[in-house]
Image 1: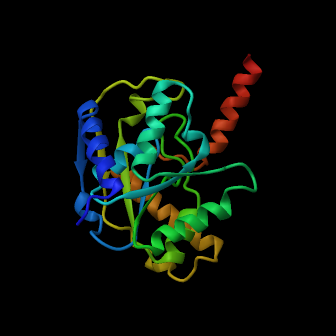
Image 2: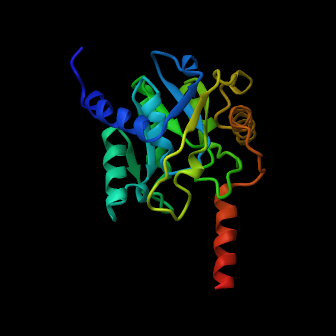
Length: 234
């Protein structure tokens, strides 16, 4: 087969990433070799999409917030180039801008038989714990019929914590589990309760892999509260 642009980019990005951050990978055999699949992972660092793309043999598409593709300092520019090189696309997450666009793009990726990566928490964990998943994950899985493979990144919060611009170089882990059985909710993408229960099942599978403490709240809400507290203390 001819070498694709993705293959060429990954041939450069992957060995460089592995050299900087030794990766311990488990459970890759759980990812189907062909056909649509959703990778649902915890989210600890802005580098998480890069690590998942490096270790998964198939191209992984992430729809990431536009702000992640920064062009400020050198580290941000290099990170942005790396994300785009391995096939990531951005969406505008301002109210009224992103929901339909993100869903349409996600379904299109799966309809093409590709691998779609998603962080159900919707944002990075503010403290290393695992937060409540957003039900768009379940809607996508139940609408498309694609299997959901849980994934867990371990230690990435220590290499590029929030507020730090230059990463440190540490060994990290990437774990994959067997596809989550969502058959109890098949055909129920339009029911809010079914979406909630199916999403919770996926989050439980992620927690089993990561060992994180689970929090029955949305990470975005906790981040908003912390930001308000910092504002009051200033």
